[in-house]
Image 1 (cartoon, helix red, strand yellow):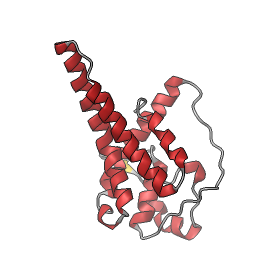
Image 2: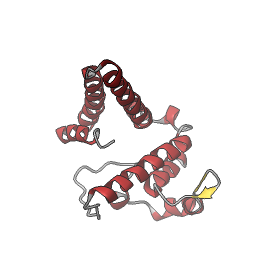
Image 3: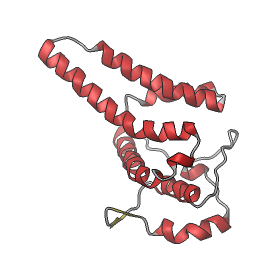
Length: 167
């Protein structure tokens, strides 16, 4: 996803996709969330490519308390799931890392939820803490963040592992 405050687009490319972008629908209803992810997918589907500029600097407004932050994260999660259906046709053409990331973004929360429910059931039924769940979740997170750090050649990507408990 080319993040909203950090993304720049060629006017000619945006003009070609503007109608599709402005008329987003999900399940028959107009959709006004996840527009940056949606526009990224439209650009990729149209054959354009994206570039990552590691030294780019941008400013944005961020939530300053837990409630708005959690609502933002929920909006982003809905956008991820919705736009994955649009991106499925692109997966064979994407870089293997991007394919892994798309799959991880969708399976990760599901596996996290299932692991948490299994751990809770083990605690309620057996009275023991399921350390295997914590280790599995930590391993999944570290693998994903390590791949990103390796690909970007930037160890700061390991810090994204702190986002997992919020997920």
